[in-house]
Image (tube, rainbow, N blue to C red; front, side):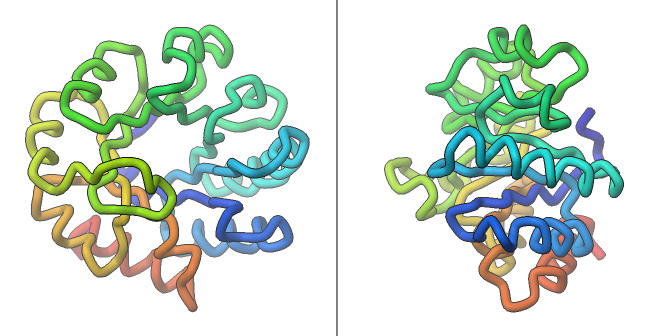
Length: 208
């Protein structure tokens, strides 16, 4: 379950982090205050994703941090992941739910108010909303900007995680626009000190 305490969502993207550094980076992200961690490995084989997930899941579980896979709902049970995040072009939330069961978390990416409203009734546990700003991880997506954040939060009774180009430098703008939660990827993974970076982001999200 996603609670009000889940604010900082980190994505361990193997496009930025080598397999050898995946475990140390996961520990740093958690030490810095990441509340949810997702493994994204778009260019990796299914077997590589399976083995990486099996190694990361216990680290997250020991810290009470939900661990999610990007895509691949079929791997959730065998890897010990807590759930899966899917996109608009993937299988439906209902299909994913049949695969992962009632006890697993399902997140859904949304890129407009309409998609967010549809997600509200889909059975998803939370949504990602964005990209707020342009981002190299989603170069084909037009940024949705800051303007729709407040309306999505007002009309969608699910946890909303704003995503896309969000970094320490612009996180305050995202919160001022009405957000309560954020996903940060490259800002964390490319930071000189990921622990300190996460702590600063977590502090902004919690207003401390």
